[in-house]
Amino acid sequence: MAVVLIVGVTIIGWLATNDLLALLIAPVAYLVLFSLRTWDNRILDVMQVTSRKTPRTPNKRFWGTNSYGP
Image (cartoon, rainbow, N blue to C red):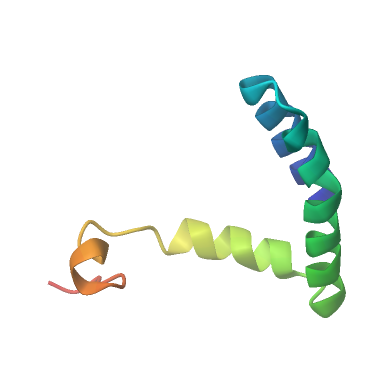
């Protein structure tokens, strides 16, 4: 999944900017994701579930954090 994520973001970034820097960021991003995967095998799944289950709230800017209560 990490390879698909890196390749997808790199290609989209390169097509959007037409800049070589977008292609040069890919190996660095791959190394970061690879190191995260060696630390925890399910880190990408945890990040995906966390982003889905804990959306941003409108009052985050005011409180500095997500506040789900009234």
